[in-house]
Amino acid sequence: MATEPYETHEYDVIVIGAGGAGLRAAIEASAKGVRTAVICKSLLGKAHTVMAEGGMAAAMGNVWPEDNWKVHFRDTMRGGKMLNNWRMAQIHAQESPDRVLELEEWGALFDRTKDGLILQRDFGGHRYARLAHVGDRTGLEMIRTLQQHAVHKGIDVYMECNVQRLLKDGDKIAGAFGYWRETGAFILFRAKAVVLATGGVGKSWKVTSNSWECTGDGITLATDAGAELIDMEMVQFHPTGMVWPPSVRGILVTEGVRGDGGTLKNSSGERFMFKYIPEFFKAETADNEKEADAWYEDKKNNRRTPDLLPRDEVARAINSEIKAGRGTPHGGVFLDIASRRPADYIQKRLPSMYHQFKELADVDITKEPMEIGPTCHYIMGGVRVDADTTATAVKGLFAAGEVAAGLHGANRLGGNSLSDLVVFGRRAGLHAAEYAQALPSQPVVDAGEVERVMHNLLKPFENTGGENPYAIHADLQETMQSLVGLIRVEPELKEALDKLAELRKRLDNVSVLGGRQYNPGWHMALDLHNMLTVSLACTVGAIARKESRGGHTRDDYPTTDPHFAKVNLVMRQENGEMRLREEPLPEMPDELKQLFEEGH
Image (tube, rainbow, N blue to C red):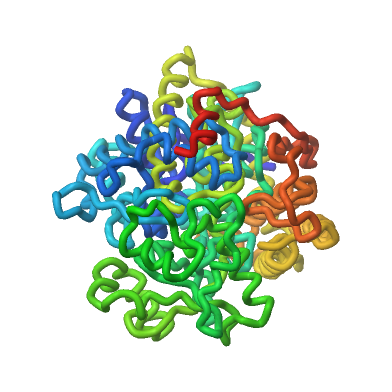
């Protein structure tokens, strides 16, 4: 094959992804004085972080002075069913308040208390109101602030540039190879260190809150390069996504609706969550409607309403109501804030939700309830990283945000994602820069490997009369939605494995028409490699974890198993196959264990 020209750029650190984690990593790396670039698959400012609405969790104590990092740590661990990496949860709880204040210094305009402090709202699984927020548009404000700061620092940005492969020099990172989405022209980045901040995997499922970018790119880049994955079976189905009309099915309805007083009801008008309070949360959750209403109005009793249980508990309860025939006409349940809060309060606190339902569903949430149901939202699993440095098993490769696993365990608490982005984004940028500075020379890129990558990327144009990439994607989404969804059983998971193997064979024969210039069919064909990789890892993990825990619910193993309480399922790709092993969780120090015994 004749050598095709490609443009080449050289940096110390490249950051793949321009969401909260990627921008914060780039800002930190640049501040350390290394040559830094950000590469994003979409346009700058279009990152999926803007879809995060409710707020960022940080124990600042502005609303409840009793709140502190130890309570936040305990809530995070308990929400994650103790499968979390304790050190990541500790770092996150300790550093989140500083990251919020830093965003404020950089220009973020948070909502305020009467005394002018940053206001904090209630969210599921958090003992105290601790989510710093900007109405229900917090992610948008975070991206606006970080983006302006990054541009002000003069960091190079490559927009609509899709990275397809990480390149190595022996056992260490040497760069990355991809293409411009608009022209289809190839581009090579030579780099000493790479930070992955590519977000999630939701586009493998049919009903998802995720946007088109979330195709598991970073997880696949990492595992193809030799990194390890953990907890890939742990996928969060957010309890409240839109269900009607069909064109908007899955779009997120922020937990802030419930944090501000909204309640879940079935078709009979019953507040059903009281039937589903698990033993784990009985002591601090309201037992009846009167008590729950008192919690909303006067939270000094230190109880919580069952509508604000962790997301996995609420999603399962909603699923049970729908299966029992108590769902709405369109197959969801009702979320009602109209009967509980005045219209001006709703429009002030939840402006995006008000407009979203008015424009997309012709529903006025100040007058009538919303129809909602579970939607694939977030993956707790991902690339295995070192807690302090975010380093992966591959030298020079770091990961932060949703692409990295460990912090959230088996289930993420709402609001912990935005603070996760900036806490570990900062650490990723810092340690990637330090690694690059310590490397004496630029790693060598193998020209022969680049040729092979180019050949693979162009293969869909060479296959004539083959499979349509959109047909394969539709079948993948159907497979994952119906067989590896919210509720799982072994026969269906094994059926999913067979179907994924069949889809992989079909992908080998995928063909696209036309040229390379902005060819969405080609982009989809390349994204399918990533989606099939993460779908396989998720399914393999779901078969191996024979228990129900957090985001992983097995109908054939409905209880938690003490054995699986102590292990991560670790995966590594070997000869094209996903090899799985169990590894004990890191041991938590005694002083942190005491927090659970004392019930702080």
